[in-house]
Image (cartoon, rainbow, N blue to C red; front, side, top):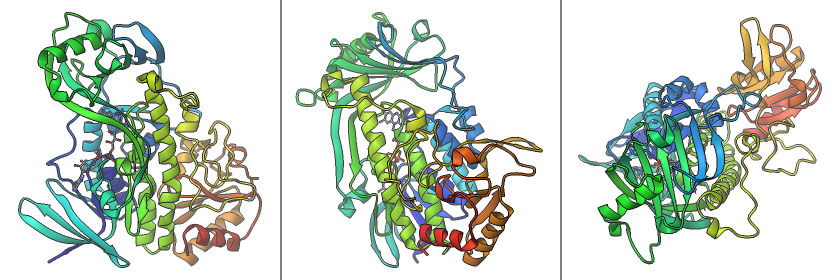
Length: 520
Ligand SMILES: Cc1cc2nc3c(=O)[nH]c(=O)nc-3n(C[C@H](O)[C@H](O)[C@H](O)COP(=O)(O)OP(=O)(O)OC[C@H]3O[C@@H](n4cnc5c(N)ncnc54)[C@H](O)[C@@H]3O)c2cc1C
């Protein structure tokens, strides 16, 4: 007998698990299948940036990510010749930029392995089923749904799903099967990585480190030295030219010599625990959706690790897709809402992947720099909080749909992230950000608009609630949101502004806007 699930998610990496968690938040169960026997054990990505933590705090995971972060005494992000120096550029030294003016959320340093474990646990709590050692074998879709064949040790079985989420990584067999091509800068370079046990305390102290190395004596002329969760274990990597050699050419003796060169400690006592090789690639899928299938994470956008946004963007993809799937499945939105996944996430994927590519050139491969390359964006007000989603929104006259704005100078335009404004309540201070996340919110200072929101919520049967600022909850919100106190701002569950009225209006205005946004 075949099974049914509203959403089948293939891949239990950061993007698949995030999709499952946020679907759970919106009350939609999902089935996650992962061909490996468990979540990742490799020390790949590290760190949850503030925008991802903003999403994670909505599902109560902010503290868990902080708890899972190594208790180091600081952080070094450097471009250098070796971990012992000389240093060419100090990108971060001990203090992270304070983003208190942009967000109530901090950042965390949990490893990918810890983050996946935490997400998997929360996804299950919120109603997802995760099946490991289970592979998507094949699938087909029509206007009614997706029929997938899953394979595990006991054989194959059929699952019917309303939607399929391709969270199946950079090679994405689902993307291939759909015939979706990719575009972008392609392969940046090949590298070999060693997970090593070594005492580098004399070099790094008890800090977390991320060294990007440029040294002609290193294989490929470049390398990395990166902390792991264990203070005596590091990932050391160097480049190689696949035209002339392959990972097997790195004998133990040669590997140890490269590791000592990268750390800058000629006599370093090193134990190699594991070896891996990767191709650093920048590629973006030509489409993020095809019928009932939606791509998230590396399946949609693969990027060099330089800048630490690959995993964070994967988490955000799940956050942004989940509310749309849930709204369509509940019948609150028409299927056209899902067209906005490609319209909104592909430009952001392209931007972030290109930015990481530029980071990679600056940090590791200056030999590949092109004269017309703009410098990478480093300002988090732009990169983390400035991108716009110009799909399921009511765009205003004169808005050209620019992809970026600077969140320190918010405009309140539909398509922009709802600005963080501190509000006073009898129970203490809250952020506007924490008012949003579960359904639509109409932010207003007007009783009349609040009444309109209740009326429209009932008329359309959608999750929409008014949040009245004034009375017990006060704060200077109108400036950042670009409205008068008698105006109203409609905020989507993913904290993006969908529509606004700068002054008074009617329930009919709000209903018209919501119908446009929700494809009703
Ligand atoms: C060396 C390195 C360092 C990095 N550092 C950072 C960093 O510091 N910060 C950061 O944010 N990002 C970093 N990244 C990027 C980050 O690791 C990825 O962007 C992130 O893991 C992508 O998650 P994902 O869920 O989309 O894909 P994946 O983690 O690749 O997960 C895809 C999953 O799908 C499964 N799968 C595939 N096909 C099937 C199938 N047919 N059936 C069942 N399961 C299937 C796979 O087994 C896999 O587990 C780094 C990457 C690398 C390689």
